[in-house]
Amino acid sequence: MTDEPATPSSNPLLFGRYRVQTQLGTTRLAAVYDATDERLQRRVLLHLLQKHLVGQELLRTRFITQINQMAACSQPTLLEVFDRGEVGGRPFMVTEYCTGRALYGLGALGVEQALRFMRQISAAIVVCQAQRSAERPTGLYHPPISSRNVLIVDEQRVKLVENWRAPHEELKRDQAHYRAPELSEGLPDNPSTAVYALGILLYEMLTGERPITGSDAHTIALAHQRAQLPPLSRLRPSLYLPSVERLLARATARLPEQRFPDVQSFAHELEAVWRDLSAATYRMKRTTTPPPMPQQPAPLTTPTPTPNQPVARPPRSKRTRQPQTAQVRHVDQNQFRQQNRRRNLVGWLVMMALLTMVVLGSYFGVRALADQFNGYPNFPFPALPRWWPGSPSTQQEQGEIYIVTIEAGLNLRRTPDASSNTNVIAVIPKGTLVRKLEGPRQTGNATWLRVRVELEEGQREGWVSLAYLQPQ
Image (cartoon, rainbow, N blue to C red):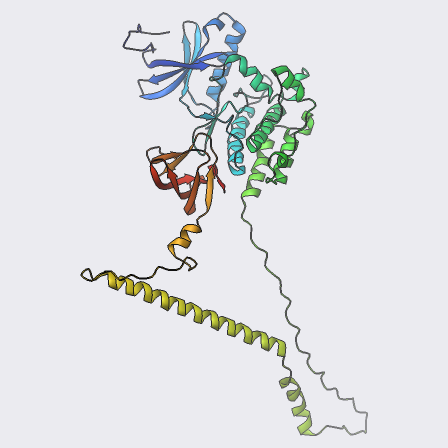
């Protein structure tokens, strides 16, 4: 495995480049090591075929095929392959280093966060399924879909990886929770099989529970053939999402032909749900009926004179003054009273606003002037009442209270920036109450709040991600 012998002070070196550190665990086919690329000075993961599988040609060929397919698939949610090769008859590949907490066991996520993570996962599967051919009817290889295989690398991103943390005997039971019913009947894999697994995973993210359970892998796999997912509102009564319910119902349909035909169709519908839930809503404007127009007097008609008959004309004074008198006297008394009330109300509001500005301006002006004279004793100015708008006590009491929901604790940052870990002030434990001071502020793909929190070391203020907070 090494180009140079290992000494007590050095770790094995592979191909004069990759310094192998400790073994992190094993996947179905490979042993995963923490390593360092000494040429590029970066941390990497080394996936090496397990030693006892070298003689099994079928599994060895399968591992090589997976390496080639992963190298051909470049997607941010999947591990990027840097290098590949063979040492001592054992194929290996070098990928980017990835660490984070598994999605399994975190409980129910917020709707926005669950849909954001599912968009990333489904986009990765779409890239893999897009490479379908006669030899690969279901597309390129991708890691098994499971909440144990989804690592949360920061507040906004996840990685879909092979699970090297769990013992090998638990992997089969874990994947049975997402196994489509047709696979237990002996039918081959198809593009809608991954759609079923994604639907079960989305349901788990929204409710915090796996909908299909059992004592062993066989029992869990058979349960998918007759089980029906309960509504989201049964586990989360406050959750009312008809569009998400329809998406889950079609994705987890019992028959493959009733589901989305492939993950690309599922992802397209998921984007529509995302846009629908994130679109801003506005209050409908009230439509007012215009007042009826006053009726005009009917025009005077003059009969057509017959031959040899003189035309009768009214007196000049009556013909010119009668229409003008009728138009001047038409007045809507109700509309006139309403206009007077509006004018009086607006004038009263303006007067009260000016009076408030004068009082506040005088108060703060006199207080600022008194502070300039250091030689005189401080005059005990009365504090603003608690009910007065803008008083410090009112501002403090009006701050919204939130509770931290993430198990691993929530990072308190100096600035609303999740790309750097150097601005982390402290870690707020789950269940801690925080008070909103400012926000929300949208930075990148995250929504941030500036909060105040009481910790063991004292009172702290900083920025946190709104995705991990719940209103209290």
